[in-house]
Length: 173
Length: 143
Image (tube, rainbow over all chains, first blue to last red; front, side):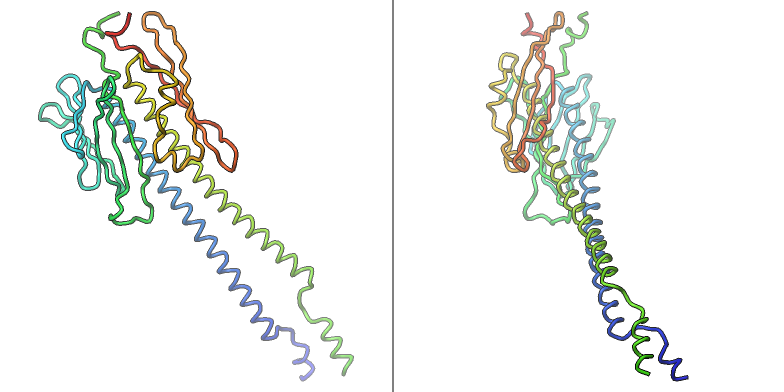
């Protein structure tokens, strides 16, 4: 009986402690790495979302500006593009997003909204060149709520009326 | 009895030094690989951000060219304009080059405007990002 107990295979307490502490170290290391990995993935996907929204806005703003015959900005929060056939495109910044409306007289034909992700936006029309240049500036607001994924500030410029040919010109061969 | 004890100690299960060092080496390699992956991903993110900024600058510059007078469109004037502050801050040693070529095309001959921007990263210039646009004279200015 005694001999049987002596030959029992097993680990000492010290060995078990070493193994447990090593496992704990390993687990915490992999936990840290996994968290970093997940965070970087989250940042990347937020970046992609933000960039595609920005690209969509830039394409739309430039298309409207190129198509328009004139642009005016009554205040930094508003910009209006005058299109052919009595249509206007109205851009307005309110409730931390940019609203776009295509209007024909008093009827609204299209309505879109672009999120600003906590950035402040201002319109300006620069008439120093031959054609007006609309400038939309997206800046970060220092006193605003800080998001974990702050949006990147940027500037979008659009030349007004470069697609807009005079009516006589269109009928030319 | 003594011999029996010694015998027991000899067959006690455990790991050899080689086994332990092998396991440690594998672990080390795995963590080094993961760290390298994280560093590379953050570098790629920075580069993607720089490229986005460069493309944004080029688009804005091209819009300015389109808004400018036909006579004012020349390489020196385009290159002479200051780069935006965001570009100056985030793209080290950024340089914008413009090349303008005549594009003969029947009654509406225009100019092909090619803008390129390049900057430095780790002491090397990155492959420039370019954007091309076509400028035509306003109808009233055409001969």
